[in-house]
Length: 247
Length: 227
Image 1 (cartoon, rainbow over the protein chains, first blue to last red):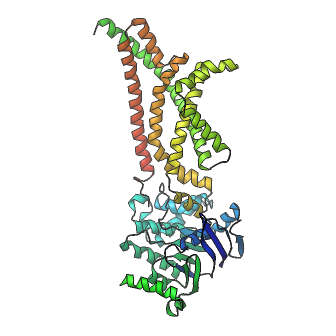
Image 2: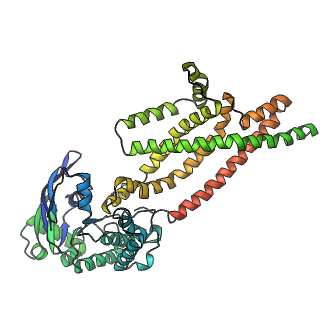
Image 3: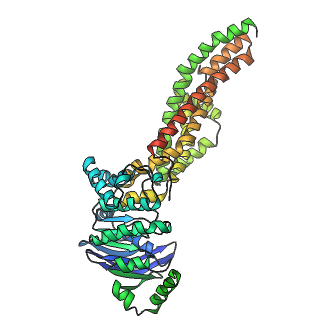
């Protein structure tokens, strides 16, 4: 459903991504793992054109885009099929929870207001925040804000959701409520790419793993193969260091 | 206080106040409204980085902020007639005040827009909104809340600065007081009286500012917490 070929990206003269490929079928949940600075977030941002790639090709639902040259209109069309969840939520600070969810539907997709609100409430229900529809950000915890952000992503009924370290900005006790919501989406068959440091979560929820190291995809396999039949010493060391941290 | 002085103050008070309401306030409101339009346009040119125009805007702001308001008034009112451009006092004052305040407010607005986190724009893109849709519905409302107190400051400044228009023959509040003082030789009393009226006007603006801030806060859901 989604295929990325040979993505290169430099920032400030330093090449962050040296030719990354990935492939995703409908219903796949791809966990992007790897050490800090390996280019995971840049990869995801390039995938939604928040960063402009130097070169690369992305095919979504049969439509192929040249990532360096895609026009504004092509990017807008592409984004109709995607949604993005940010590490620091990026909820609209001047809007309520419900307005955050409906804003894009009403403004960008020209959906009638009552229809958008109905869909927005349904999305909030899905993340367990039906009672917070009229709350502003100041009245929501970090975990709740991220769940609103997920509701915002879901409400547009995207074909794929990109999640950039969705729990990294959260207090430890708030992480599981967000992970539970993401797991629910995975169980419902939502196609997702998740950049995460939550290895255990990746192991249980992801169908595939992409391991990034120094701007390259070191491994791109099924989750089972990644964790059970890992041959790369580099990856084994990384997983080992995380396990030590867990103990 | 002599009876004569009291009499002068009592009769001049409504006269000065009326001139304030009929001249100083309209001059301030009209100039400030135009200044906001200029400021908004200049801020957007800089934020959207529109090539060519950006340099024009920077030059304008540099020029206005680098020269005294009184000199600008003289240049336009007494100087431009040498080039055959003759403006009556009121339009001339509106023109200069709007241009002057516009340069300052442009900087206020630019800073306020830049203070909105970049993630807000990215989030707008990701839900399918365009640059201008996100600006209008997400960024500018937040920026306006930030800009509101300093803009109120500018409005208060401008109200008082309109007294400079007396120099270009505009019969506003200050000139009215000046005339009475000249006729009666009660300088201290008359200038204190006009100062008091400016103070009253500015107090009203300050009250309006407090109400406006409260309202903006409610509309934005209390204190903004940004991750």
